Image (cartoon, rainbow, N blue to C red; front, side, top):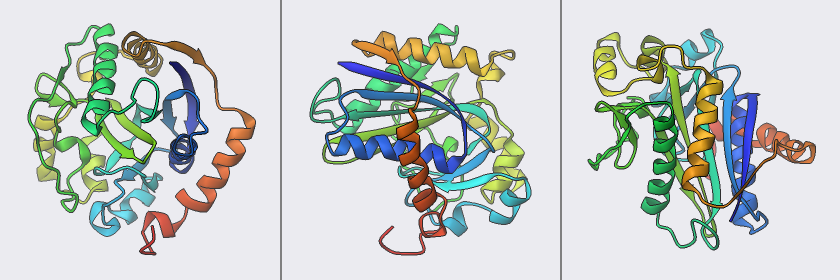
Amino acid sequence: MRFRIIRDCERTGFVNMAVDDYFFEKCERKELEECVIRIFRWNPPALSIGYHQKYERALDEEYIKQVGFDIVRRPTGGKAVLHDKELTYSVVGSLSKGYFEGDSLDQTYHKISIALKKGLEILGLEPELEKRSNKIDVHNPSPCFLIPTQKEIIIKGKKIIGSAQKRGLNAFLQHGSIPLQLDYEVLAKSTRNSEKEIPIFKESFTDLRSFLPSLTKEQLESALVKGFKEEFKGEFEEIPLKDEELKQIEKIATNKYSTEIWNKKKQESV
């Protein structure tokens, strides 16, 4: 099995979602031969909301614009995530051939969680997989990280990575946020939560610099890549996004992810 690693640069939230969408749709059409693993960054910071969330309930638009962040709706489910001092990973692969052939959602999620776990272990951490099966209410304004679902990564009982997955007939997309440093106050204000919720946030989820204060994005990126290589046996090649790919991706970002039709779900077809 061939795996393509993309160590991506900083991009807007609209472009980041367009990249994941581009590879998912290509894989869904059976035009993608390899599994694509991307590690990426956001500039400016952004609040992403889940596909099924109601825009007005999920976020405080006025506050987010005031602090200069992007707002983008993900193609995947789950709840709001603040992308600031963090790395995000995404995996796009085939369900009809290769490493993930025939996998259920749970099986795919588990394989990726093990790879992420190994990456964090390389840094000297002691991550575990959440064993409880917790239900998520997408209509509740609490952020994604508040509730760890089964097989997500936790450290000392606190959620450390928040992930979501989309599946088609032939392909899947899974992406997730890995915070180095969280600003609980900004997160609370962005997601319409009061400051009274912040102690609850701190008890439920955390960031990597709480355990490794000097950890850099570059160190985390290298550890994640090593974790994926260790778990996903196959041929790995690091190939950045190509110019012809970026042209298509920019079109998707402009025509879909930066529009109110998509982000605010102005049409029922979205």
